[in-house]
Image 1 (cartoon, rainbow, N blue to C red):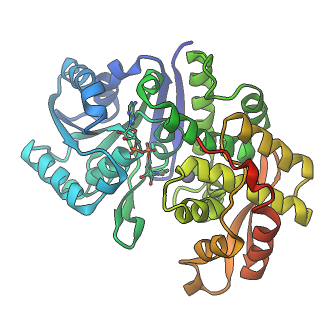
Image 2 (cartoon, helix red, strand yellow):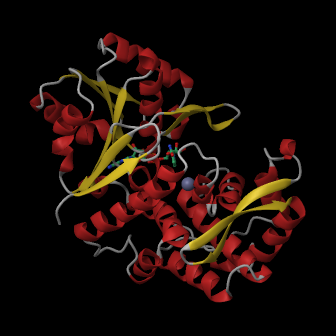
Length: 369
Ligand SMILES: NC(=O)c1ccc[n+]([C@@H]2O[C@H](COP(=O)([O-])OP(=O)(O)OC[C@H]3O[C@@H](n4cnc5c(N)ncnc54)[C@H](O)[C@@H]3O)[C@@H](O)[C@H]2O)c1
Ligand SMILES: [Zn+2]
C-alpha cells in the first residue's frame, strides 16, 4: 500500500499527517519541507531511542540538518516538570534557535513532553511528531495537546501546540509489545463507535490485534482513526464542545483505571468504560440493546474487558472526584448507535443510576490481558 497523507486544518495551523510503512526514513525531508531550520533535536525515551533514533538522525542529516538526540528514561512516571527542565536545557545546549525544530520520536509520553518543550522553548518553536506506539499514532500525536503530570494529577500542566507535521511509520508497531498494542485497541474501538460504522464493523470481524493482521490493514485502520480525530479537532481545536466526544468511554474508564491503581491499562479501562456506559444507556432507552451488545462483542474480540468488578460506589466516587467543586452535574458522552454519540449534561444522581445499570452487569466477563 502506498503512503496516505491526511491534511489537518486547525485554526492555529494546517499540517499533514503521513501514514505508511517505512516513512521513518522520510522524517528529514518532511522536516525540511514543513518546518525548515538548520538544527533538529530528536527527543525520545530510553526504549525507543536505541530502536529508531539512529535512522531518524540519519534521515535528518541527509536533509542537511545538524542534529542532537535527547533521551529521557521511559515511563509515565518521568512525564514530569523535572524531565521537561532537563530537555529544555538540552535544547539550549544544542543551540536551537527560533527557526529550528524538535522531533518527538516515541509514544504518547514522549509526544506530550517533547511537544510541551517545543511550546516553551524560546516561547515556541516547531515540533514534528513521529509517534511509535499505537496510542500515539491514533490519538495523542494529532490535535496539539501537550502536557506533563503534576503530583496532583495527570496532564495538569500543559499547552496547546500544534505540530508542523506528523510522520506515522506503521513498521514501528512491530517492536511494540502485544500487550500495549492490544490495550490501545480500546481507543480504536472507541473511534469506530464515535464516528464510523464501517470501521467498527471491520474491527468486530477482524480484530486489529489478530496475528494475521497485514501491514496494509494497519495503514488503513490507523489512517481512518487519524481522520476521525482530525475531523473532531478541526471543528473544535480547544475543546469547547465537539472535542468532548473523544471522551467517549472515559468518564467510567478513568474511574475503572484509577480504582485499579493504574494496574489496568488505559485502553482496557476505556473499553470497559465504553461497554458499561453503553449498557447503562441501553437500559435508559438512549441506545438499543443491540448497539450495546455489538460494542461488547467487538471489545471481547480484541480480548479486552467488557465490565468491571469495581463496586458502584467506588466508580461513582472516582468519576465525580474532581467535578464536585463545579456543582452536581457532569458531562458524559452517550452512545446512541454505532457512529452516533452526544455529550449529555446529567446530574450526579443520573450518573449513579447509569453506573448502577451499566457496571457489574457481568463481572465474570472481566477479561484481563
Ligand atoms: N496529547 C494527547 O492528546 C494525548 C491523548 C492520549 C494520551 N496521551 C498521553 O499519552 C501517554 C500514553 O501514551 P503511550 O501509551 O504511547 O505511552 P508511552 O509513551 O509511555 O509508551 C508506552 C511504552 O511503549 C514504549 N514504546 C513506544 N513505542 C514503541 C515501539 N515502537 N517499540 C517498542 N516500544 C515502544 C515506550 O518506551 C513505553 O515504554 C499518556 O501520558 C497520556 O496522557 C496524550
Ligand atoms: Zn484515552
